[in-house]
Image 1 (cartoon, one colour):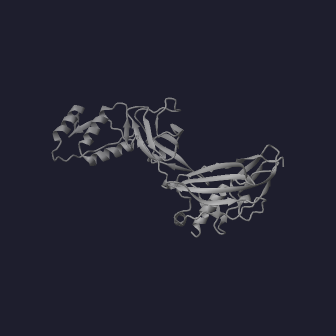
Image 2 (cartoon, rainbow, N blue to C red):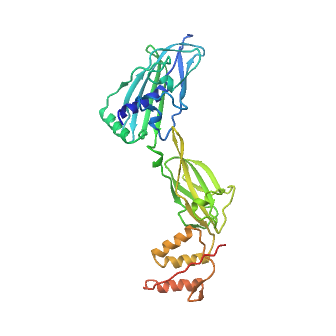
Image 3 (cartoon, rainbow, N blue to C red):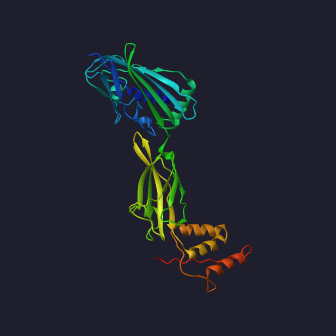
Length: 368
């Protein structure tokens, strides 16, 4: 991508200039800025830059701001100065990249609103932006150029905009805007489920869920997995048992006041979603789907689990898979046609432990 460093500078100018405007006949003694939030995790550069002309885009949706002269009804000639600094991830301190200034323009007697069209170079608006004064930092510019050749988004880091409204040498108002870009792409945001693990058997109808998410806002969802559901994904097409929005938490115990209560001998699917904020709208990122079962007390299951655990890692993996699909042991355990009690099974496992004996285990699944 040619002139990628200048594109980064242009984006910063737009954000800075988003504050450009300010003052004017009672006369103006101060100004107040009202600017967009610029609250983005990811920023797509193409939406701020006309790639063909290498200039700021003149039509950016939802981009507007205002300058309010004080006292109310005052007016006069003012101009704006602004500077932009960037501190990329890992940098010890911010580095100033660019300074810009407008020519004199009239503000007042009321507030002045402006959009990206007013701030684009060559605008027909009465707010005219002079050519930017770049601050030469060759190493930083090289880094930005290389990054811009590979990615369509702004690099992770902190962008600081300092804006002042002036009349002559008098500062009428100032504002500092800090924009934190946390992700280079929505795809890099990964949410990980910690507990319950896949195939877990929980001995409580109020399990505790825990997860890891790089973004603080998440949505936790729990669905029942019925016998008719072939996959966990199918289960999530039904009505959720729990769907709760959380902020800043990484653990939650199933609430007693949830719309639906969990029940024993039932299988459930849970997952977590987070929202990545971009200038193109929010993007949802979902974790994997974990299946768990509520089983308060089941001696039969404990005996079967003990059997599989005694048969080595391959059998343990098979049993975990069966649990993951919601299989629950029932009926009788027999050996050569003879019914075994739990104690007899435990004795058999102990007796054969460490011996080179081959077992054949058959699992019969009868739909409930």
